[in-house]
Length: 48
Length: 232
Image (cartoon, rainbow over all chains, first blue to last red; front, side, top):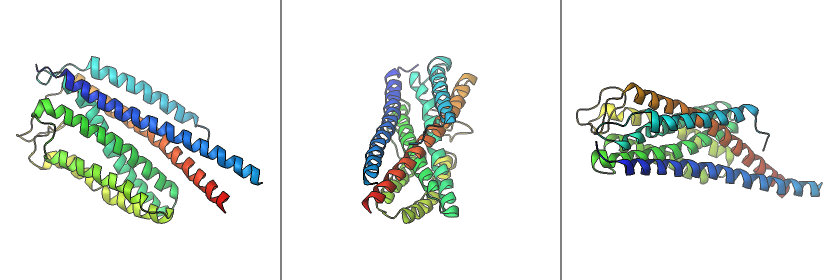
């Protein structure tokens, strides 16, 4: 049997980076949009 | 953002539970392949991520049809969400496959039919995001994007059947491989169960991510509308 453990680890490192990276990007974008929404709603209240 | 629906909460927890079980099956349930050794374990999530990638591209095409039939921008939002998630999953599948190929084929990359069609598919949908950025008017952007995703869908079956139609070294997981295929293996029942469980797991994860991404798109639309209202 070939010794290929390092390749397996590399494969799952790539998988983890891809998945975690995407999840973090979703969370950050949602947080940023919520902040924008709060600011805009405050501005709307002040205008009215 | 609207309150998170309870069913989405359930879907998140189901996704997490399935993912934990799938990971356990990959590392502890499926046996080590006799010739390739440990790297064969990459295969389970490679197949599952590739499946989700292609599934999302098809979903984007269906959402494109939905937009053209209804002119409702919610379909455009769903289409964008599906493409974005699929691009990530498909890129991961391509890189994982490339890492598996090194000990199996002796090279990280070769321009054989499956790798070539997969790369073309990934680039087609990467170009979709660029196309969207170049169009300001939401209606026009949605119309062009819908047509694009419908036409882009053609690349999905081509990618899927490429290893069955052409001479290739890429192994066929289910069915008969070309005589020149390298790195193929006979799946034991435990291997097959692990692969199928991973595919189901990633399909559920895709559904959860799609819902989250659509909600994000809805929030972005609301922010944009409020911004325009205040600018007037």
